[in-house]
Structures are given as structure tokens and as C-alpha cells.
Image (cartoon, rainbow over the protein chains, first blue to last red):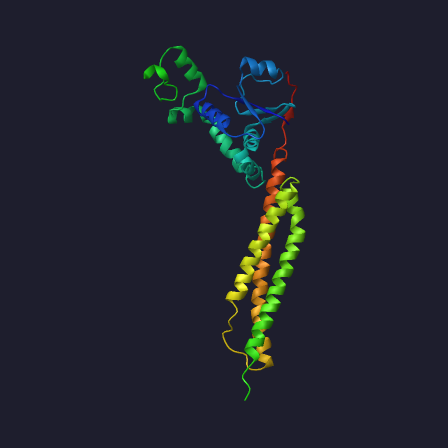
Length: 145
Length: 135
């Protein structure tokens, strides 16, 4: 396996923050992050049935597909500082817990994003294209200075 | 009346046996731990030898340190029987310390090796499906 493509939900603030975090981590296996249902994602994986999956999807360069908590474990596995954790979460004793946490967060991701005021990539793109500066400071670039 | 020479002889025998045991365990570790370390450092033999040597130096320091600190007998042997009893207690303690240190070293070896194996290990979960990918 030489690379992994991570399909995340660009409309969700929590997921977009997770994407930024993943991209900032040192990687053993390079991660490429694509918004789920985007043009590029559909072009690359024409058989991926739903265009907008309800959970995180990771596909390797060889076509191995992971969904939900295994997808998260594979993401951790790709990161230098968290590979140990991926093996820990994959143990039979912890796997159900990992699945529970991931499902709990996944189904509430939009609500959680609103509660914590996390901006999604789509919202940021909209705000930037509309020429407004974002109020959380995350994308308030030069124009406010 | 001749002075009691049992304490001095006991001390000498204690030091000789303890240091001898330490050397034996350290050499065993040095010889048999090397292969673990070479594997843990992905075949980098100079690095493995260096770490192996440093581990053995630490092992010697702690064990010889314990042996010398624990030299003093709480009561003095007055005949052959008490000398053997005291020696046996002391050497038993040294053996337990050596055993504990030995297992600590083995834990270090196996940790290093496990970490090395994980760096090249496949993902810990199997893929749920295989799909065609368009470049």
C-alpha cells in the first residue's frame, strides 16, 4: 500500500477540522483528503454506490475500502505518532468501544459542529467567495488587518 | 585466641560469587539480546551493537552497585554454619535482583522489536471491500 485516499464530509465542521488535523500530522503512508461526493471522488471511484456516504470512507491505492471505525483506525495507522493507537483500538477488547464512539460522533456530527461553532470547508469556501471574513478567525486573513 | 576470620572470608566469597553471576548474566544478555536489537533496528548492526553495549553497561552498573551496597552483613558469622547461612541469604537477594533486571531488559528488547515490526505492519483491520480505482 503506497497511499490512502480519505473521503470526508466537507459540509460538516467537525469533519473539516479532522481533515485539517490529519493533513498536519506526520504520515508514514501519505494521505490524500477528498470531499466525499466531489467530482474528483466520483471520477476516481465510479462504483462507490452512494455519492455522499454517511460515514468516513478510506480507499487505498489498491482499491481496499474501509468504512466507519475501521476507516478511522486506518487513518491513525497512516500517522507516525498514532500508529501504536491504531493497533490498540483494533484489539478485540477495544474495537467495539471504538465503533461505538465513531458511530456516536458520526450520527451527531452536524449537531456537534454547530454546538462547537466549527466551520466546514464548504462554509469557509462560501464565506470567502462571498467576500466576507469568517467570524471564528479561522479564515479571517489579510482583509481584516 | 585467633581472631574471627569468618566475616572476611564470607565477604570475599560473597563478592566473588555475586560478581561472577553478574558477569555471567550480562554476557548471556549481550550474546542473545543482539539478534533482537538487530531486528529492531532493521538490520542496522552498528547501531544494534552500540545499544546492546550501552544496555550491558547499565546492567553492570546497577548490579555491581547493588552487590557492593548490600555487602555488609547484619550479624557476623562466627562459624562455618552461620557463614553459609548468611552467604546464602545475600546471594539469594543478588539473584533476585539479577532476575528482575534480566526481565526488565527482556521487556526493553521485546518493546523495541515490536515497535520496529509495527512500522512495516499492514493495517490492523481488514478492508471491508475491494473496489476498482481509476487513476
